[in-house]
Amino acid sequence: MANILNIETSTEVCSVALTSEGQVLDHRENYEGQTHATMLSQYVKEMLDYARSREIKLDAIAVSIGPGSYTGLRIGLSEAKGLAFGLDVPIIGVNTLQLLVVSTMFNHFIEEENVLYVPMIDARRMEVYTAAYNSALQAVLEPQAMILDEHSFEDLLQQGHTLVLMGNGSDKARQVLTHDRVRFVEGIKPVAVDMMALAEKAYRENNFIDVAYSSPLYLKEFQATKPKNPILGL
Image 1 (cartoon, one colour):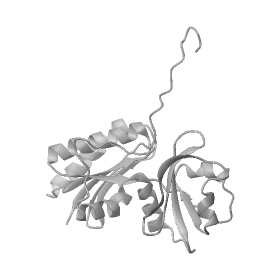
Image 2 (tube, rainbow, N blue to C red; image 1 turned 60 degrees about the vertical axis):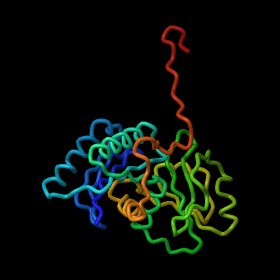
Image 3 (cartoon, rainbow, N blue to C red; image 1 turned 180 degrees about the vertical axis):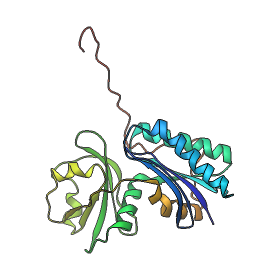
Image 4 (cartoon, rainbow, N blue to C red; image 1 turned 90 degrees about the vertical axis):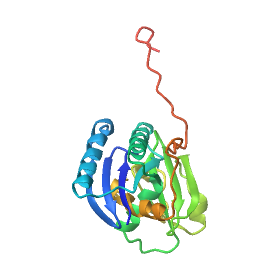
């Protein structure tokens, strides 16, 4: 039996869940955005208190490794590393795009053939972090940063696939992807309770990331906004 503390901070949602063999024992979620730095440690403490009060020993920490918000991913992974060092347990890295697909599979039955799941995370302007997965969660299109236009995913559509889009970046796709085999699933967000299946599978397979040297899956370099000169206005 694996007792896993799951941490998800890749988007505007900050969430933590304590899971064990297919069951969610306790969880916390905040959808207000920009609260990761203040709320995550408190949520983790509450989960640890819950575990101690019931003599539950943690076997691993699972954390979303991206892609997603640069700041959110750093906060989540830093918290996970600190816990892993302190508790002497391994870290499981959960791909955020796969997490969105699993959430969709669990909550929505897609009654079509040749379906590919296309998760999208907002990445500025018309750009998204995306990939395409089949029903076995195998990548048909590898995770990448993509600028959306009317030709996006053209090859997959020409091959006869139905594309099921979800995530906070999929609203951008509505503006340009009007093909009759493009479907949109609303309300799918990456949250810690949905990490359970991926985290438990990774634990069974001893698929862990390096506690000291692992880093988030950014997919593109961070681009900081240069502040204007208050005198020159530049």
